[in-house]
Amino acid sequence: MSDLYPFLLRPQFHERVWGSRHLSPVYSTAITGDPVGEAWLTGDTCTVANGPLAGQTLADLAQKFGTALLGQAVPDVSRFPLLIKFLFPREKLSVQVHPDDEQAVRAGQPNGKTECWYILQAEPGAQVAVGLKPGVTKMEVERAIHENRMEEQMQWTRVHEGDLFYVDAGTVHAIGPGSVIVETQQNSDTTYRLYDYGRGRELHIQDGLAALKERTHAGKVKPGKPKSEKGKTQANLVTSPCFVVDKFALEKPWEFRRPRHNQGSVWCLTAYHGCAIVESKDSAPFAWTSGEAVVIPAAVETFTIKPQWEIEFLCAALPTEKVGHPQTLPF
Image (cartoon, rainbow, N blue to C red):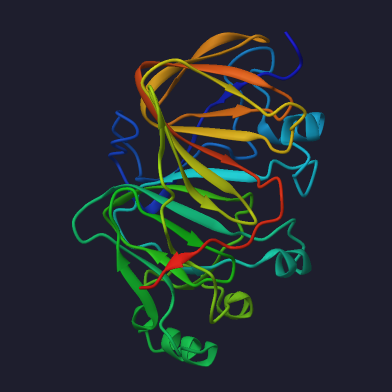
C-alpha cells in the first residue's frame, strides 16, 4: 500500500439548540440526548476509519502530506480546505454573517467563510434567508437588530428538494426549520451572530456589521444540465472561486480516473443515499454509506465505486483554474 489512499472519515455530531433528535433521511439512529444540529464530515478533528492511517485526524494528515493529499490548487498546504456538514434545523438558526478572506486574516483567522447549501429534504413551507432586501443599508440593519425586527430586512424564500443556494462571505443569512441540508464551505467556523430572536445567546453585532456586505453574489444557483451514461448520472451544482460541487447517482460499478498528471485538488465524496464499496489498487476495499464522507487524496489517480445497489453522493473539490461567482436566480 502507498502512504495515501481513499479513506473514510468518522462523522462528528454537534449538539445545537435548534437541532433535531431524528436525523433522517441521512442517519437511522434516533438521538437520546440533546438535539443534534450538525454532523461534521470533514472537520479538522474527524478521524480516519480505514487502513494504515486509521485514527489519525484530518488536520494531522494535511500537515503531514501537504499537496499530495490536498492538491496544487489549495491556498494553504497545511490545512484541509473544505468543511462539509449535514444540518438538521428544527428551529430557526440565528441571523449570521461570515467574514471574507481579507477580513478573516485581519482578525487572525486563516481564511473567511463562503458556503453553499444543497437542500436534501424540505417540508412544505421550509424557508431560508439569503441576503438583504433591495435598498437595505448597514445602518438600517443595526437599527432593526436593536428594534427586534431583523427578520423583516432579509430575503426569505421557500426551499425544495434539490435546490442549491450559494452564500458568499459577507452575506447576511439564516435557515428556517423543516429542511435537511448538506453544507459545503471553506474550512472556517468564524460566525458573527447578528440576531437570535431573543434566545439570549451572545451576539457579535459590531464584528458582524463590519463583515456585512449590502450586496453580494448570493442566491439560488441555476442548476446544471445532468449528464447520463449507463448506470451513472452526473450534474454540476455549483462552481465558484472557493469550491466546485457535483452530484452523482450510480447504479453500477464505476471507475473514476483523474486526468493524467492532474493533482489539482483533493476530492470529498459525501453520501446521502444508499451505500457502496470503495476500491483502489493501494488499499483494501471498504464500505461507505449514507452520512459518511470519503476523501480521495490528490495523488490517487483511480478508484472504483461499487454501489450496493445504488448510491447518491456529492463530490466537492477546489477549482483548478480561476473562476468567478456562480450565476444566481432572482428572488
